[in-house]
Length: 467
Image 1 (cartoon, rainbow, N blue to C red):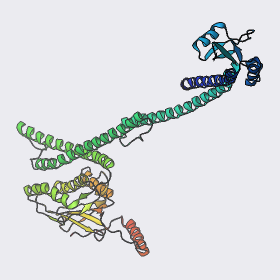
Image 2: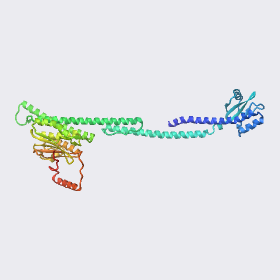
Image 3: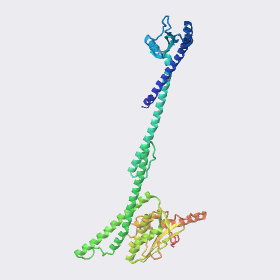
């Protein structure tokens, strides 16, 4: 196809060059004929005419021939009709004959008209045409080769761009919403690449919004569910194994049991939902920041109302000024609700609790104290999925996971109120890094060695004090 296109341009060029050669050969014939016509204008003597003819060309075969001077007819190649037309029209005529072409130039000599015939052979008309056609053919081949290489490169880029777009589309179809393409190739494919990237961005945003909506919904469901569980615990006993009961009393106790079992099941499902969706949202959303003080004030609006219903004295300190933390707000809210919810779940009604926020030594500390019975085995309570209260331990697990994500930790100690004290440490993003000295490093290594021997507990001295 490329060769045909090249030939379509080169063939007219070759024909034009051939026509130019023909015109140059005929112009040379006109020059030689002009020498004879000029001599005829001066003299018609046979000797003068013969000298002019001999001077016009060295090749006897191409020397001009003069018709119409009288005497014997010259041996030319022009027929009578062509000669008569040139004499009658009194203008130069070019006639094709076998072996070449004739140029007939009329000369008016008084009452008669002579005609000078100049023969141009085919070799002169086509001089150099073979070389020109070979050159044009070589040019055509070169153009065709260059066109093939160019088309091959363009096609390769188009195929590569298409392959990348298909690969990215398959990756998105498999759930990888972070894949993007580098728009390249022809304009249409590049526009398709930009459109694909915009589509992937919108899908990722919609996916994150969906996950966040599910996580927020599960978080919002958990707090009213805590109220339901506490109210259910305030109902009568659901034990039907001891004693004799009427049919109505049996139905009532069985109904209470079903309510409590349904609440436990619903709590478990919500815990799993919070656990999975928060993990996915954290992975998709990346680093985030929140104001700990604002979050504490907001969540205590709900817990204060519930504490009032249960006659629980409570106090909040240190939540007046802005205190940033490197965790998403929803994540920290879930952890805070989980720890406070444990206070309401595992301490009797009327038990006091306290929440304090402080900043010190490069950390943000959130402390929740209660006046309950405390936690007999803090290490076991902090282990994933374990609790000494018969539950799954997911509440402290959520708090621990959030603290670890913020380069912090969770510890359990005896509170000054008499019960448990749960402290969440979060790295302070605005803290100035401290210079680490050689002596400090040695001392820290010594402390870590002592902690390994004592089981890893570090309280109460390593816990930041609350403001």
